[in-house]
Length: 216
Image 1 (cartoon, rainbow, N blue to C red):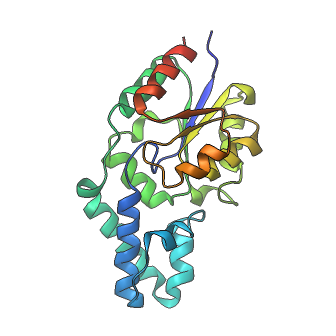
Image 2 (tube, rainbow, N blue to C red):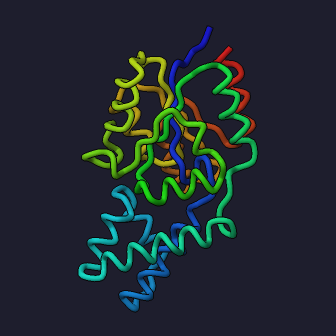
């Protein structure tokens, strides 16, 4: 008996090690356009809205050029700075064998989302991709989860959100679905462990074992 009939994944820190790439891309454009150095912590504090929203606020009249530079840098450095976590593709392929709908719900913009999913070879595995550009309110809004649930007519009690951030936990709870927190590359591990997710996984292997147990 399958315990889940729909599964949603975050991207950064969940499927792929893109956090350092994101930091580098923001630092690249802030140094170029603002002549300013920013820390990883300053960048993390802005997470939630898409990079477009952040850049628009930061860059003002230089926004269009800065956005283009951000995405160009992000794509050019992707292969060097980010990759899919070992075992993740196998986990996704296993879910696909069970004919369970798979979705992405990410705060990234559509541009960087498509770059990442295509670079790491996962783009075609998802039945739905919801980015920060596709919703009115960013995470922890449950909107991206609601869109998936409604499209596939799913029972919320049998939907699982998998992510690495506190916002994923809150979004899942707001949507009435289960939440699995992965902390193999989370920038907020201590905070996550305080939030009492339904499930916590330290490694991809632990997630895979869980899927095998719950999707039979």
